[in-house]
Image 1: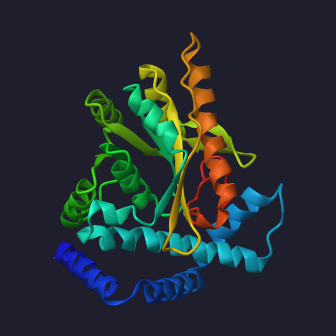
Image 2: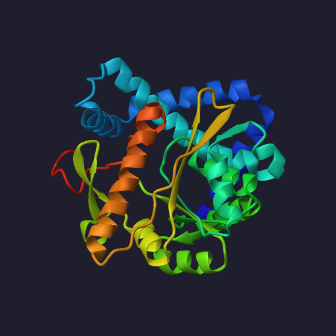
Length: 299
């Protein structure tokens, strides 16, 4: 019964997205984001704590600036979520018509040489649009790693939505096996690398000057199969036009010291994520407890 309630909400939001012109919808999204930030003391505290950690050494944000960042974080989450619904009936050409690409020659160079590709990114901007746009732009199948939705029905709806644009998913449980299979089938892999991971499953990195846990998945795949990692991030100034920046690859490493190699590769990913956040700080998912495993009682 709950599954069908979720599906009904999905259809209702789809109707509103069709009904209202984009400028009006953006205003509605901003109002919802302001409301969510205002009523959720829990998330405000997490956001402010994260901002204090991230910008403590560079600059001290005013309360007004923290509020702007917090509302923007909700706005990006809403844009990402509603964007999935909005693209449900789109053609591939329509998905990328308002997206510009920077550094596309980096990906094409790997494709021309027939090399395997692993993209790394994070919850920055509209990350769902990023995966679909890359898959369409470079005519490849992109296999992402994610969490299965609690609703089986909605998980299947989302799966079909993604697959229309050449994006497939493997779930976190069994992600390593799924990624290896995807690479063996000459598919690209995309991994979100900016969430806190359990200490016994992670590698510790320096992130904004503080220790943080980090997924070793991309590093293990890179070292084992000698695959470079390509950072890619999406941003927007108006929620109508988007820009995807593809950064110089993180070169794979394989020496006799496996632990040192994995540590170096993982730190390079954290550094790339930090660079992307600093470039567009209002677009990161600031409500995530990023440092919860390494700074006791910080939240």
